[in-house]
Length: 200
Ligand code: GRF
Picture 1 (spheres, rainbow, N blue to C red):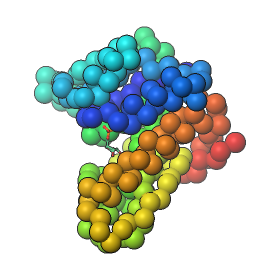
Picture 2 (picture 1 turned 90 degrees about the horizontal axis):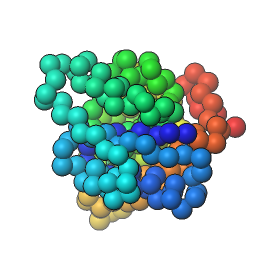
Picture 3 (picture 1 turned 45 degrees about the horizontal axis):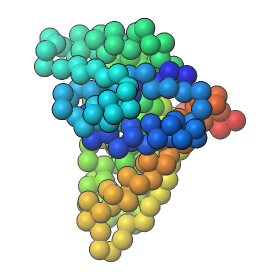
């Protein structure tokens, strides 16, 4: 399966998938392209280090969101992409992208959905005072962080945590469940039944 990864930042989740492919833990998959909406995202350098082709698409050079999305679709075309990963990609997917790649777009979110959707989920959880938090890998639908859940992992919130130490504990688990979800997808083991993802 050919994979495209959309990123906006440091790319540690991208790295976790690259590593799982290179180690042979994920087989029959290749990352064909990494697309960023931020020109100097460190994720692009990680991709280049592994000879993965990169594309920077500058949102400010398009008239509207639709034109920007068209450019992403163009960048995907020709790679025969079977799976798109949103790995720290900080934008909401447009309708056409979701329609074109229904149940083939996977996002990683740093909270236990449906709690703490949207930005700064770790800070939201910390401020709320929950005693456990975690991360969620899910298929992307039209909503924000609302799609069918594939995997979740919890972590405790400790007395002496800050939002940052909590985020670091969550990130460690993100790096496990994102590759795990990719592996399940590539092996054809995920079936979406309405809201529910069944592992076959
Ligand atoms: C992660 O916490 C991810 O869950 C969130 O953004 C962060 C991206 O980190 N969506 P990285 O770019 O993968 O290092």
